[in-house]
Image (cartoon, rainbow, N blue to C red; front, side, top):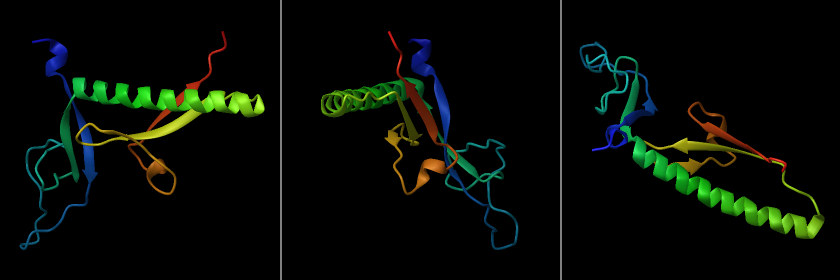
Length: 125
């Protein structure tokens, strides 16, 4: 098996406050792992999921292919209509615990922590 096949990374999926049990003690586990997959928040209040690097690469590649095609077509249309050229694109994306790469739109999460900003700038030939 290839080493890349075994590689995983942690994706933080929640940052929740600790809750109290009936006796007043804090809920959580004692693993010390801030990315424990259990449904009970850890002492730090963070939950996460292991994600295959290979799956993330495939999802990001698919996302970039779709976005690249979309902006290529948009650029051709802008050139035909106005003679302007698209010089730079900045996108905010989010990676789910399942490895889905999602474009963040306006009106919500674009400013939240955890968003990845991808900035594409035209290379002049």
